[in-house]
Amino acid sequence: MPITVSRETADGMVRAALRGFAGEAELAALPVDEPLRPALDLDSLDFLTFVERLSTAFGRRIEEDDYPRLATIASSVEFLTETH
Image 1 (cartoon, rainbow, N blue to C red):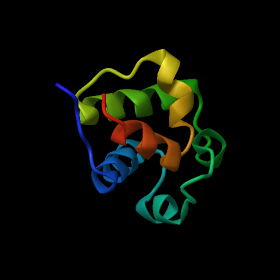
Image 2: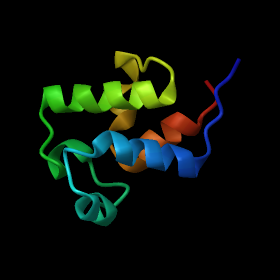
Image 3: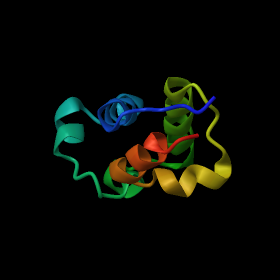
């Protein structure tokens, strides 16, 4: 059965998965099209932690081939709101 997530829910999941790497104020000020890794100084392990958190919240494994689609808040929301 396809998973359907609203844009608002997806945005909340992405921001929740990024907590700990940045504070609430920093996340709120981060432009949605800003690349996450350089903006939040995420190394490879940090990015994998973000993906795992997002995967857990989404209730579905996110494949490595999809990692490039998680480059920004906007692209992550787009990925999560597609019918899977």
